[in-house]
Image (cartoon, rainbow, N blue to C red):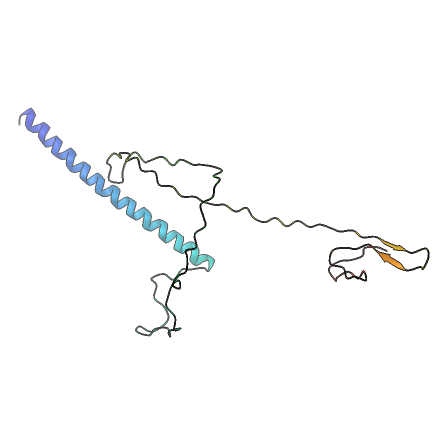
Length: 167
């Protein structure tokens, strides 16, 4: 066997190995996706919030739910539920393009830049404010005088959730 024949045979072998590697990468990516989906479903099942998408239901085959008389989905003329794009963007995160495809090929930038805006609404923090009132007595008529607190009636009686404190 000549050197040229050996080189050609090795090139063919390398090409076959590359194809096999690309197939294995594709299979690996699919198996990883399926594993992630199974783990997600398992976690939802463990928490008791199992999604019933494409699962068998307890109704016998062929039976349907009774119709409510209205069309499914949004009513005609109903606008979408997306929030408007905010004027101010606080942070921008750049996600780099992967250098290689799942098949093993190199990735070339096309110049397109899709984006999405995520609005994180901070949790509400409860603020408790104690309103302290004072009680006095008129020196002239002896009438009891109570300072006004939020929620009090006009005669100075606090609601049940308030207390007058120590007297």
